[in-house]
Length: 166
Picture: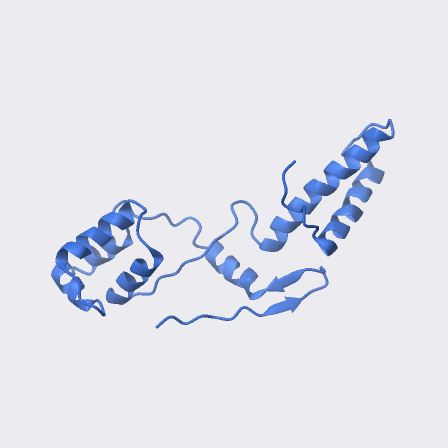
């Protein structure tokens, strides 16, 4: 039976929601370096447990054939297995499927939002400075301060165009 954990939203000083999701991502980040075994998790765990395919097949809630065990292993290795099938296989192996997403570069959702807001703020300030016949310079303290102020303003409102690429 699937248990669904409710995510509780907590408001912070940063003016955007900080959720239980951040804690979950932090935990998942520790697993970032783990790569899928070449033949897949089902196969490597089954072999490590010295569990014959016939016995594993009998451990599924709805019995499956030995060939289906091989098919599941193959589809996982090829990246074509469903999450539900992985979950059922994990259960039959006496394990739990852990599934989630982690940011590619940043460590948190908040950092992803901040990076995007800073990029947008920098583009806006650069455009404003260039339009007033000035020279945009990231080392200019006044311009840096304007970028930080604009970044905070963007994070407070998160406009609909936030993720829109131009």
